[in-house]
Image (cartoon, rainbow, N blue to C red; front, side, top):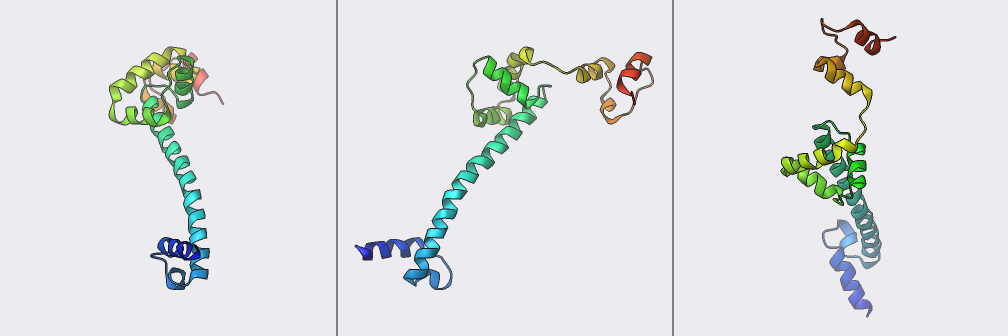
Length: 146
């Protein structure tokens, strides 16, 4: 029985450096530690992938003027049960399908006042602090108050 366990330890220790691959006592400790790292790595992989998916969905939804949190809230409100992995896949490979989702969700998302002011002006450089020549006095007071 112990021979089988020893064989299994050496099988897992294949590729290790030094005596960790051929001395049973050292190999057993290194294999246990390697399995601990593998277990933790599987959890970290799930966390990292979720962060990547959230970033992709955020980038896709911001293209249509909806922030990520509002987009996810709108999906939950409309009972659309797509997970973040599928949403990221749609945002990357099926932009028209993703756009239809955003358009479906957009009426339920409350917009802040600042983007509307920028849309009214119609000047993209406003976000950088540049002001156009034809800006009204009231709008200038709202945007550039100190």
